[in-house]
Image (cartoon, rainbow, N blue to C red; front, top):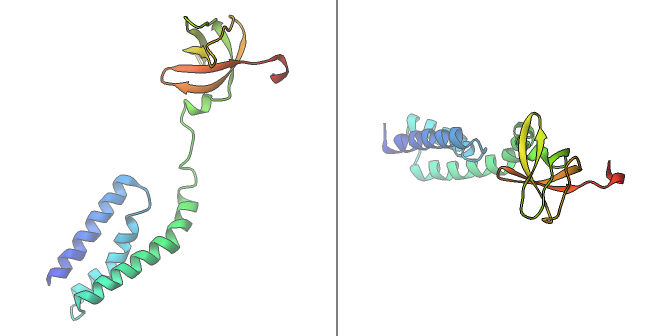
Length: 149
């Protein structure tokens, strides 16, 4: 086996491992682009310059032609909301009121969260509020007006 065989084998292995770790559909195209030069170097008789040009051309083709298609179909659910992001927009009832000095509390699915008004205003106990942001372990809320219900 010549030197380029080991180079292509290394590229295939390293880019496959990087893709496995990141799952971003980026380095897999370099893995695919290195397979043909790897096979050609194993057979022998093909200059290394041709192998490198073939690798670059194949990798670019795979990236620009196949990556958008695979991202559309394989990674379509990758932008899902986390549990805390799903709280945004949810309407809740204040268990205890809040003002500029004191955090209030709300209950979400059996879990009590600290809640503060987005404008540092006063919200009374039993008021209906809407979550506008999650800041660490606090919910930033705003009071819901009667017509918003």
